[in-house]
Image (cartoon, rainbow, N blue to C red; front, top):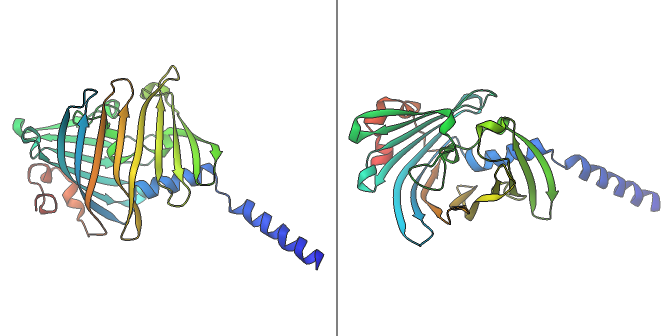
Length: 260
């Protein structure tokens, strides 16, 4: 009996070791949880931009997302409010291959102009908020080196360091990933001097159609004292979006999926 118990314990310990995930597996599962739920998805978003004095500005927009071949994705953002952003469109073609840049365009109806967002501008402010363009579609995992620095009972703590340090404003960022849902719940960004200057947090999570989903996220700029809150409503997955929505034609003629 003693030998049997010892054998069972040995198998249990071995199984636990083999069940442990590598850091690459953890960040891949976290990226999938955050950006790849279902084959496609839609949401209505209210964005509140709050400066250090407490003054607020609001944007409202519809967001469409579609997964395509090879882990690539397409995103379509249609602005409804305020009046000066009405009918403005932000389009992203996300590329996951190493060395390839995402393609981003902004349609400015008042100027009848399609403006391409250069890869070097992906870390700049998204429509005057504390979010950056890259936050909309997510950062390519292949752009960073990942290190598991801590494991707690509920979280994986990952340090991410850019492979091309000159392409971004941060030296590294630390992400805390929920072990149960694999959603990134908290991220802290550090500048070239090692100063913590930016925080991104998933403040509310709900299960929608079986997918753990962030329904509120907050970015804080610790240098300016400002923050931005995104609230996601009417979230749906697997709605059968057509890929032609994510083309230049629909920059000028927004589809019914965002106007109804």
